[in-house]
Amino acid sequence: MIGMFDSGLGGLSVWRALSARLPQQPVIYVADREYCPYGERSDQELIARAERITDYLLQQGATLLLIACNTATSAAARHLRARHPELPIVGMEPAIKPAALSTQSGKVGVLATQGTLRGDKFRQLSAQLHQHAAIYSQAGTGFVELVESGDLDGPAAHAAVSAALAPLLAQGVDHIVLGCTHYPFLAPVIRAHLPPHIDIIDPTDAVVRQTLRLLAEHGLQHDGDSAAVYRFVSTGEVQSMQHFLQRILQRNDTVEALHLP
Image (cartoon, rainbow, N blue to C red):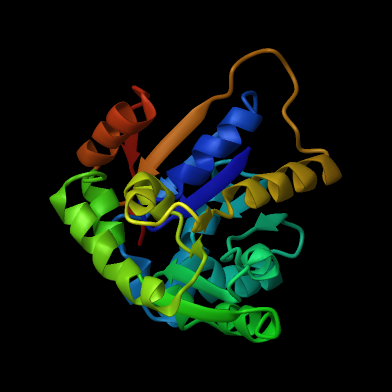
């Protein structure tokens, strides 16, 4: 079983891609909505939270951990790998490299949370690729809250996206990297505010490929003809998550409530 977690509903963009590729693989997904958004939390808070959620997922039978959150990956992935050396762990990181290697203008924009942008992983990636492109970063202020509320195409979404893109467009970037798993749900709005020549780079496919590779490497693929069992769990209120699953992902699953110490 794959255990996934995110600060909220954003990681469902990764679950959506993963379930399309692995329709027989059972998954338990934890939306840590009590602590959402992660981008405003300290690394110490996120490490402690990631430990509790990982322990819960292991108790539920998870044999591979997918941290479906860039901010949590940046803060806690190294710690979790040291704490669970036997556990295959997949994390998220902004897809700066493919953008930097394919840019024509030499300028790449990154949309992410403040937590991801201040993290060591982002700084290291930016420094490594500086010879290929100038990296301009911008926090997607309000993006996470918009997705959590299910407002994916309203006036507030368009206003927030327009405000975040303006400084990147002013720099002349020709790629926009989505550095948060919430942001793909706003991709249609982002696309609507970009000139046609600017590419949007989403790391989800690369993360799914890495998950497939680790499942095969550790012999964890679920064989059989039956459809996978999916469990969706929230540490916060469950109704809006259930509504999101129904309206956005066309699923009628019951969302379980989880109370972490």
